[in-house]
Image (cartoon, rainbow over all chains, first blue to last red; front, side, top):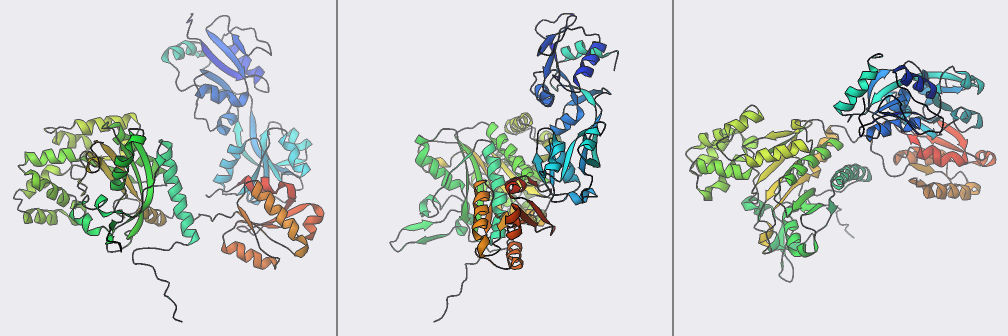
Length: 209
Length: 430
């Protein structure tokens, strides 16, 4: 099954909570490969498939620009990127929720109290969507990570962030005010995928779809 | 001493800042849409030699064109539209212009009409034209732009009616109409929607057209695009079909396109496809219109430039948007008012003013210390959403208090966070 100039590229997270499970999923399809932490492009040994290890948040871009054919990515990333990529399969790992959290002793008791407050987040677009839907005007503090720290240093009054167990929130004196969405890892495909590539890859997918 | 009455001429208007804010918002959306397609703006003079304006718009247009004589005896006219000034502009400048040349032009024009709602004597038109190509890609681009503009402005239900002058001429010829009567008949058919079938037949009869019924029948559209094309299949429909194919490739949704063989457009100078946009969102008649003209520049120079363009009727578009309540939440320019608490805090307030200005936030300062209540009232009158307070407590704690005029909430934050707070404030209804 060799298709020399027409290799399939699958983009997965280069590091982080989806990485190992993504590799396990690819193995479960019957793909064989030797991957190290530093290899950015890993060819499969038994198929015309390359595994691209890239930044989680960039995966939708690779697919949209036709530079990768499939991707394994957190649904929350798709939503944040306003991506219209088609989800082929929900993968059942990387479960998490995007929540609004507030300090335990906050005066904020309901979402409408968020009006005019400062909300720190790395998920600006998703937060805006939420605010728009609930007609809440608020000031957004754009932070790329460790968002949980913001209320304790008076940089924000609330946060909007991903949580799995809720432990990090607790450790930082925060509690959940409202859940915005649930997310899990999903397999997505590029909208321009040729029939040839689709047929080829879906052979591997047969066992799982 | 007797004061002069502060009057303005009938059919002209003064605009308050809030009205200007709405107009600018709409105009900027229109400009942005034009610019997306690579159009650059030009301007032409307001006062023009009468001979460059008069005699190009048919009898009615001539009657409505403002013209007068200067003290020195020079005959002057004001532009009736922007198409003829543009044709003159191209004739004067084509050696320096990239051909095909496309431009947008947003300027006032003048018509001595009886003023009524949506019809002033002095008003804005927003024109786009492409000159120097006969390609029907130009027509399709115009259709694409029309859709873009009206969608950006929030219109839901609008339609671009189109037809071909060439086709009208051909149909009239097949019905035995002489060439000299063609233009008269076109002008009468053009009134079909306005005055109705009976009145059109009467008018046609009055210019001794005996087969008025037959003419109207020939021009009425069938129930669908394909049926209309079928009905007219004896005539040359190449132009219509090529235009539709180009629109399809340009992804102009067919729901916005309506082929109407009875559409005529009264102006003399059209020679090919013609357009007219109406909206069911509110009925103020034609919101945008235009078409292909082949010989307009040849009035002014030997070169022949075929062109196509449309004018957006800005005032009517404004009326529709007002009626749709699309402009209710328009804000004035100032986003924040920096108050002055007392003499001692003046320098501090000035510093904040400078900081916000330098951070690119539209804001203003109250010019002297005063009761906060009075400063809030001023902010309210100017629809300023944020009022910044820096009193002795705030100065002591290096804080700033923001009064949010809409919710009435007062929020105190570290003063160095103020620019971030304001620039990242997300308003859900814009």
